[in-house]
Length: 309
Image (cartoon, rainbow, N blue to C red; front, side, top):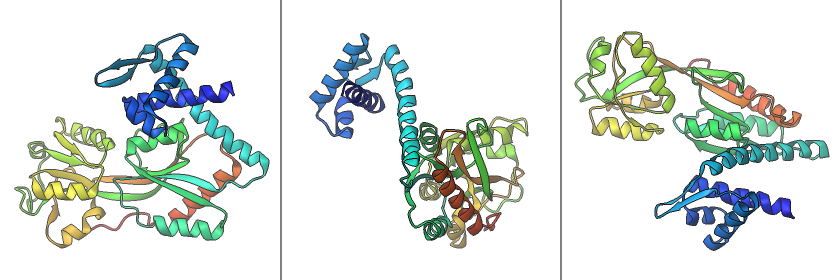
């Protein structure tokens, strides 16, 4: 009972750190604010250290709190892995694969891949979570997700993750049809830096920095990181921004004459869609089998290279 109570106290403490507000943390934990306050006070008493700094703006972890939060996240990951392994040993089938999908991608073929797995493995269940690239990798690392479908960063940690490239996505620099650069032939890299930009993910910042460094110039100012193709579309139509995205995402807008790609000396630009999972984390053989089936089904329905617009 003491162990379970301490686990709950750790969960309450982590919620307080995550939200920076005891009311929101209590709501997330489905308890009252006085109850979560008492729980964290008891945890502080047990450990003999102050874990949270309280102010009019909310709460933040002390130095001791930051250390505990780090270990609590590792403990939560270990607990999830223990449950999965015990389920496998008990002989009960693993029925759920937690899949993360990037919010800055169109996921054509995803439904067909899931359907193929469900036909081949009727006892399998999928839990789909859409989020930003950074949030997906954080949840994959913590064990909240089993596998993610996302644009592959060039600096992916191959010691921590294994990945398979599913598809090459031709990239494009995009502007509205009324932009000064629309229709220009071979825009120079230096001229592109005179405009503000919108991109779809944090990894695009590093990609553009490397690309412009190849020309010996500073990268452009990225005004908006949108994580949404729809928002990028609206921003391009509202402001004289340059957008950087996989070309096929804007086929409809190009066909309507609203948005057009720039012909620049940066071409060709490209990105890679892939599937990523953690390495050597104690997953059950059955869960790995379901992930393998999902990966194979997705590879089967996607062309190796997305069709250019």
